[in-house]
Image (cartoon, rainbow, N blue to C red; front, side, top):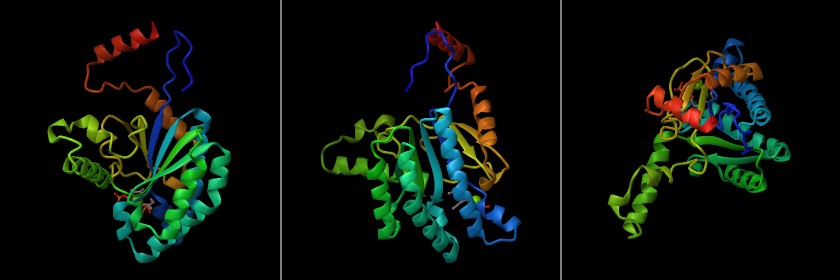
Amino acid sequence: MPSEPANAAPARIPRHLAVIMDGNGRWAERRRRPRIIGHRAGARAVNVCIDFCIERGVQALTLFAFSSENWGRPEDEVGGLMKLFLNALEREVEELDRRGVRVRFIGERERFSDKIRERMAAAERQTERNGALHLTIAASYGGRWDIAQAARSLAQDVAAGRLAPQDIDERLLGARVCLADLPPPDLFIRTGGDTRISNFLLWQLAYTELWFTEALWPELDAAMLQRALDEYAGRERRFGLTGAQIAAQTNETVE
Ligand code: IPE
Ligand code: IPE
Ligand code: MG
């Protein structure tokens, strides 16, 4: 992390941005095109978002690409999305690697085909030493699944005699949910006009600043992302404390 010059007010750039990329289907339907065309357009917007994060110094970006519940969509849409996903894995990884992006995936991988799983693992291996941006793709991901898998992993330790139930606390569970090695998201963005979490990062979003826009995901541009960052920079994050306490802390860091 680049250090701040002494006495400078810290630039309020989120370290970690989490995004629900919503509205692809409606973008296509408004053009009387099949929904999959919207997903294709959405894939282009992903690159806009990645470039923006690298330029602005956002260190981690987590994108919700496909939820646990999205498996229930019509077969042709799920099939089309899997093809698109495989294509993206085949075509985009070289360029991401070149740009210094480390790519990882979170979610229930067992539900994907062998081919997709192999490509995911290969992309993670190829980019694991990169540090320009920590990109996480949440695919076949659900916040409830995440918490359940963390609880299961603790239960296995208890059953094996490595852990006592009374020692389980927020810190231990928090260390087993996905993204535990990153700071929690500072800013959450959802496009598409709906103001809900839709089973995204339920644990990790506890104190994240939320920002919503009516714009559909394929319409995303840098100006829109900048508006979200500007609004974030002006917000007071209190984490349950009082405004006066937060002001005192800020003065301490600046002095
Ligand atoms: C988000 O766009 C992408 C996925 C969920 C895979 P949608 O497909 O949900 O688009 P809308 O919300 O129907 O417009
Ligand atoms: C959330 O969008 C999931 C992704 C963007 C991957 P959905 O379109 O699935 O969410 P709902 O159904 O509107 O809540
Ligand atoms: Mg949607």
